[in-house]
Length: 229
Image 1: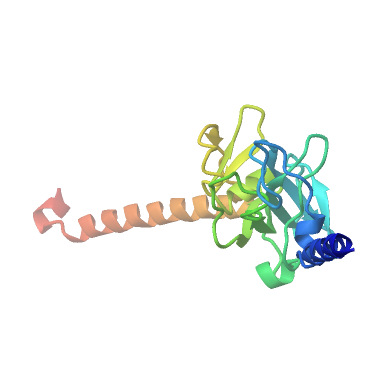
Image 2: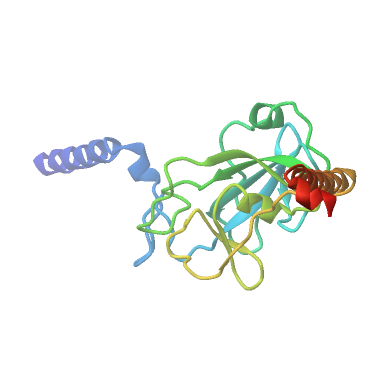
């Protein structure tokens, strides 16, 4: 009888100890040997920069080779992107063009676009041991009317691309991506047409006036003897 009581007491103590464990411990899945800890960045996961474009209410996936029109809001995000799946869209509040670029329209020959950059989550998206910049990028940039989403990004930050033209580094992040070539910014189109002709005509008129003034000055400074000749 005493032995039965001891067995029952042991079972009760074991049950009490099990129930006292925190719920995350009970629900945590087993960790594979050599695998990442739950919640930590997977060193073998695919990571990449992805392009996005705002429709005013949400982010829509965009192609870096697209040419967004004047007044657009484009975003870039670095995140884990499993094979065959898109990465995460930029986080935080969705910016508006008016708040970033103001309400003035773009001059002839170029466009203005609001660009935001999200460097991703330091725990879930960054390579193990890497740390993203503490602040993202939010800028109004100007470019030629046919400037692509990637070149507009290069107007807001330093951008490097690989041989396929994929963006691999923005403002030097991630640190491990040191290869590739630097992408040039989307410079606004140079002014042409009537304004250029007016400038050229004005320069020519100024040259003629200067030459006339020199001739008149020489005539006034001649001596009487030289005049009689």
